[in-house]
Length: 471
Image (tube, rainbow, N blue to C red):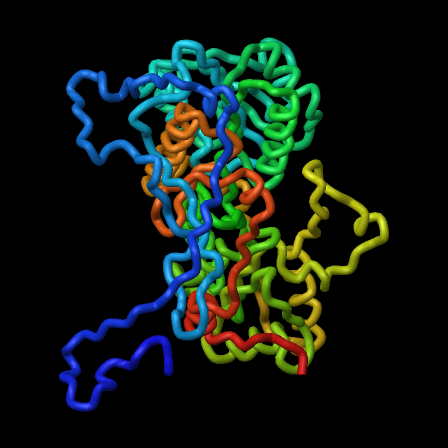
C-alpha cells in the first residue's frame, strides 16, 4: 500500500473531504554550532541589555529559546523517499541572556576578496548593532583583508555609529579588501596582540575556508575568541543558505546591461548583443537575469556544456534566430565554455591569488569565433556583434533595498550569535528562517544551478533554445 493515499480514493468519499495519513519520519539531527569554552562553562549569565532599552518592551516571543530550530529541507516527497536524517540548525536571533560581557568585548570586522553590493551595509549594521543593541564600545575595522590582522596599527580603525553613518549608501568596502595574504599564525597572533574577543569575517568561499582554519587554531590554542563568517558572493554559489547578499542587486544591474545589448541588437542589421555576466562556477546571475529580462535568446551557464559550430551548435541557432527576428541577444556566464577556449601550457597552470584556476575571457573569445564563423559560412551578409561586460559595474554599486534589508538581518543575526557565546558559525536564511550553520559546513557546500529543476526549464521555455549537445 502506498504511504500516501490518493485524494478521493475511498469510493463514495466526497472529493472535498480531506484525508489524513500517518507517516513515520526519521530522527532529527541537529547540526549544532560550537560555543566558547568559557561561555559553555559559565554558571552565571548576563541579562540581555536589549530588554533594558528605553521605549522598548520585548514581547515573550522576541527572544529565541534554546530549543528553536529550523529544518534544512522544507519539502520532500513522502511517497518516494525523504532525507535521512532530517537535518536541523539552531535558529538565529537574540537570546534572553548573554554568555559574553559586552563591557569586555573587543570586536574586529574584516572584508576579504572581491567587491560585492552590500559590503558597507553589513559593516555599518555590525557597528551600529554592537553599539546600540549591546553597548559594545570597542569595535574595530581591519583594513586590507586577513593580512590586516598582522599589518600596521593604521590598519585597525576604531568605529562608532557616527563614523559609519551613510556607509550603506555607498558601493565597495570602506575597509579596503585584498585577496590572499593568509598567514594563519600571524593572523591569530595579531588578534591576540590587539585583544580581540570577537571576529566578523565577511567574504566568499575562500574567506569561509580561512575562517575555519582560524577557528581551529583558536581552539587549539585555547583562546577565548569568537569568530563568525558572513557569506558574500554575487555569484550566489554558497550552499545551504537561500542566497548570498548582493545577488539580487547583481541581477538588477545585469538586466540593465541586457537591455542595452537588446537595443544595440535591434538597431543593427543582423545584430547580436552579447553580454558576459559574473558566474565562475555557477550561472545563477545569468539565469535570473534572463528570466527577468525576457529579451534574451540564449543563456549559457557553466553547468551546461555546449558546442559552437556544426549541426545543432550555438552559431547555427543564432543564425536561424536572426533570420527569424532580425536580431539576437546572448547572455553568457564567465565560467561557461572554458574547455572550448584554447589554452597554452602556462595558462593551464595559472591561478589567481585565492588559488582558483585563472579563467580565460569567454566574452571576447565568443565574439571573435562568431565573427570568424559568420564570414566563412555567410560571406557578404551584414553582421554586427555588440559586446557588453558589466562585471565591475555590477560589483561596485550600492545594494538595492532588498539586499540592504538582508544585510541588516545578517549582521544582527551574527551579533546575536556571538553575544550568546556561539563561535565557528555562519548566519543565514534556510527556507526563509535565519539560522546558525557550522562554518565547516558552509566552507564546503556548493550551490550550482540545478539544470533538472523548474528554473532552468523556464529558461529553456523563455528563450526557446536547444541543448546544444553534439549529435
